[in-house]
Image (cartoon, rainbow, N blue to C red; front, side):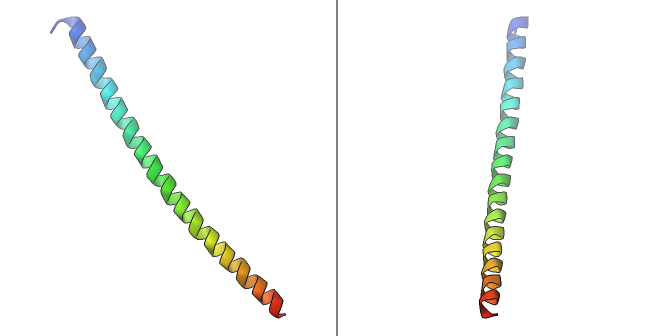
Length: 61
């Protein structure tokens, strides 16, 4: 390989590795976001249940 081919190969190799890291980061972020959305949904249901129980307590007074 001449020098230009070597530089091109190394440059391409670095870009491929960088792209793989970006994809892994994106997948990790998406799974974290999904997990947080699930936690938020559970918390919202819990909050609504608590508010409903408080409303029932106030009605029975």
